[in-house]
View 1: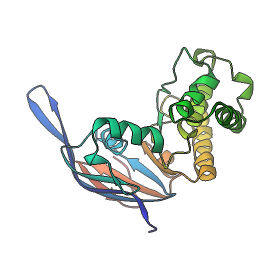
View 2 (view 1 turned 180 degrees about the vertical axis):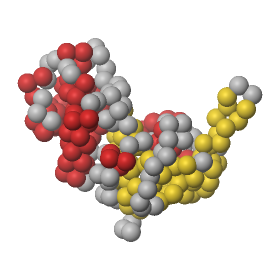
View 3 (view 1 turned 30 degrees about the vertical axis):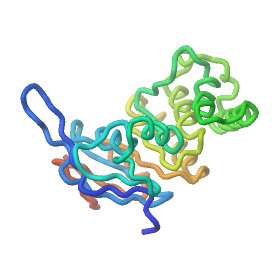
View 4 (view 1 turned 180 degrees about the horizontal axis):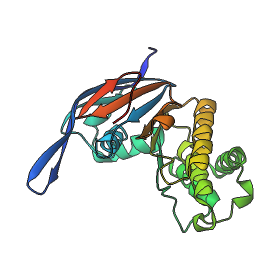
Length: 232
């Protein structure tokens, strides 16, 4: 394995439901190499999205460490975590999460503006991305004027616009039909490769996971790397 971009050690996390605590991550350890595409499989409710939220510094674990590009993000205070996430991480959501009052162009440009890009560089980058996703003619459209597949293409472009070290995708094809979903996976892999980003893609679908370099499963709070039968 090449130099790891992500090092996760002894990660524990629980959540409270009524009067009971549920352990979702129970001593998780994981290394992810720079430039690798990793698929994280698991049943609904197994903790996949929780792990993604911890890696992205949205949440903090009860115990354990996460190091990304030599930054120990589990030690960072909230303002520093926000800045780290803004500069180094891109996120693709199942439900797109585009801002409805902004145009396609503005949704993508906002990420660059928050990262301090100049107006000229932002314009050039957004136009390049819109060409890549074949939606330049929709630059001034609003999200509700697009199909689900088109909205997800915009979401992919937005997630990778600032050239993040790490791209996280949480069930990115979950709201799409099978054919459109396959097109989205191909587009994500193409853009990750061209931008030389690292990708973690969360899914409960083996067909989605098989597009990755490596597959790990999350079951009963533990990660397991294996080949063969993934039926559950």
